[in-house]
Image (tube, rainbow over all chains, first blue to last red):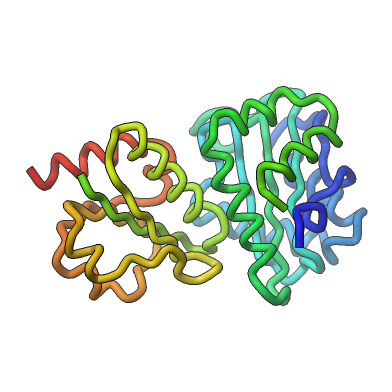
Length: 152
Length: 102
């Protein structure tokens, strides 16, 4: 498995214009639904919020990583959005500009998809990787760079 | 100094691995040796042996859920924190962990 099976340009939006967290999560869930990667948008969003309630997924580095192993997920996926305007994720914490939505199908066998996702999580600690996410204008170029870094 | 660390979180998808990466990056910057075991969605990775635990100066436990096979770590002084803080303030955590054994 490589990264292209988890993420492609149809579930990346580098100019997402939303006003708040709810709108961002809905817009990204819609992208996943359109690509046939999730079954029910409502069930998926409810499960994403269940995780948010445990603890915020705003990592205070301009990046939030909402995630879920919802039964609504048909195909494990990583959706990515870069927001035209930073938003507040909670009423505390730093503003969010980049959102990685990690959707793991609970029935998917093996660990390769989990390895790729954990690798993305590790990369987020790297300032250079985050800088690339902020600055790369072209979606294909960004995906290509990401693919190279993840080693998929 | 020789540091060992263990990271874990409820879903085991992201925080576990981000905290591990943050601790490794900070340890390198501060000039310490570190081995980080992750207990996440892929099970135990980079498992720390009892011998490695016995030889470590301190253990950073950034575990949001109870660690598995914790009996390995009986003899090492522990500094307990969570993945969120480890991700945001890894250098501070390492310095505090080392200060706690002085």
